[in-house]
Image (cartoon, rainbow, N blue to C red; front, top):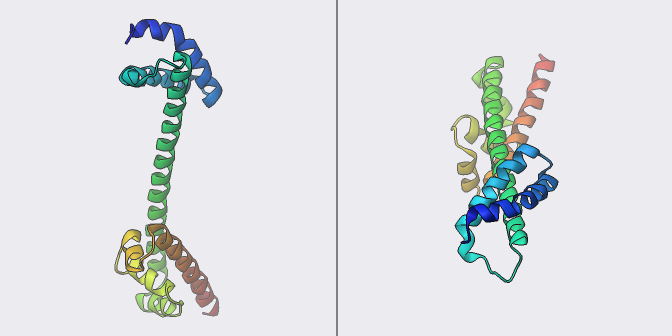
Length: 165
């Protein structure tokens, strides 16, 4: 590789400007510029000399930006999943505080299948969404959605029950 410092000095403004336009965040563009040149040094052997070095560096910059977006999306989904599970635990505690176990089973028994079975597995057997999905030969997301719907139905029936008392 030619002197890395020379390449950096020659193309840093181009790459930085490209990243500013791409992500519209100066600090992020600075970080990604550094990541771009680090990746370029590691990948220099794969660079085909038939294309422009600046174009190649901008494509690396674009890929670094998209990689960052994918990582951020995964982190966001993980956080949402953790928050949903925490909210579910809170829901279960509140539900059990308000009604007796026998009342809960009576209301749960009125739910249609597969909602009744899914909620029983989740609340009383403490199975995870992945395990529930496997038992039904479906995805983890399917189990999560079905459990959410079942809880919503249970709450509605619980409201009806308390109105009638």
